[in-house]
Amino acid sequence: MKPNSKILIIAGSDSSGGAGIQADIKTVTALGSYAMTAITAVTTQNTTGVKSIIGIDPEDIFNQIIYTCKDIRPDAIKIGMLHSQRVVRSVLKALDIIKIKKIILDPVMVAKGGAKLIDDKAIQLLKFKLIKKALLVTPNIPEAEILTKTKIINKEDMIYAASKLLEMGAKNVLIKGGHLINKNVIDIFTNRKDIKFFNNKRHKTKNTHGTGCTLSSAITSFVSCGKPIKKSCELGIMYVNSAIESNPKYGKGHGPINHLTSLEIKAKFK
Image (tube, rainbow, N blue to C red; front, side):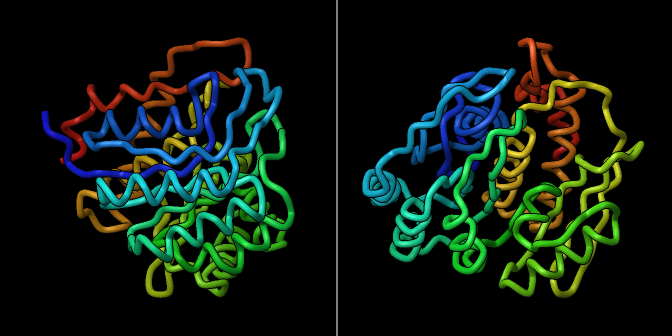
């Protein structure tokens, strides 16, 4: 089977394999695309939490991006964990050179277990520079609260936060509603012309490690193959929901989801 597209993933490594660059590669591969990487950090973690984070030198991150793209030009880019201001600047510099338009930004800030994964100066640079370069930004509710300095307790607050992100220069926003205490999970997609609610059943499981990384990579995979951004969000959410439902129940904490689920539900992605 020949890959459908080529994707560059800029993100941190998760030693437990459930999130980060490992989840990204699994997702992109499972959905039929070719994954390349620029690793921003190496984390020591498992399903119970993060033990340590070692940042990669920003110059090496820049070189990974440029050298990879010189040889194999990606159709789309997924950006995940960027832990410092210097790292964000190096990525911005590289993006200015390679000029890829299809960029999906997952503003990773806090790990599932609560560990902070980005510093305050990096957040400011992400807000005022990097968001403008992305085709889509995919924050969860805690991330959207940090980026917009608002409190989100209901669907209306999600819509307001999304409008604030559009004011910052975002082209399209998908706010993930998994952190709200509701029977269903409501994710909201919006841009300056459109709004769409994705309403799905909440699965009763603690095994949701890496859902954000997986969703943004799934969306990138669909976008890279030429699907519209709203449809890509819909298909990405479908993939993640199936992956949560069929999780393998690994680990003592927040276990990983099942990235191989696409092999079973491939017909739904037509």
